[in-house]
Amino acid sequence: MIPKPHMRSAVLSAVLILASVIAIAEKIPDSAWQMGTLRSVTSDTRSRVLGAMNNGQGVIGEQVRIITHYTIDTAQFIYQADNTTRRHDKPLDVTINGPIKFAVMGTDIYVCEDTGKVHKMVVATKTLKTDNNPK
Image: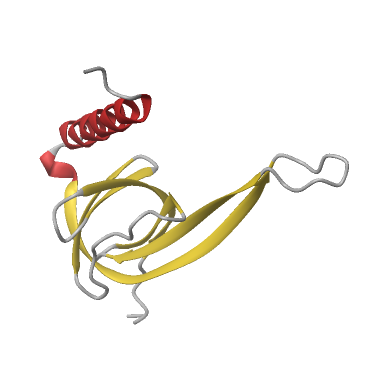
């Protein structure tokens, strides 16, 4: 039996997702991983109209993206990691005020869920902590 086109797409998607997870795990050296505390998680929703009005006819579609901001506190820095997802994507399984494992590679940050699954995000900000007690 020949798979239907939508089944082939689902199988191909699953293979690509698995390959990307393996690729992420392979390129991050063990020495890059560090621990921090997840201080907050906030989200913004952005939408974009797809298509245009045609002689007063309706909009072709709308693309909704959710940008989730993760604030990670370490001994030296405070990082804000931004993750862009679609409307129906599941949120990450993380605990606010709990420990979080992450790795920074240039402008990318890899965040590990409580379950161990790794997600690639973008470093939005990196703030150096300063000592507020002058000596």
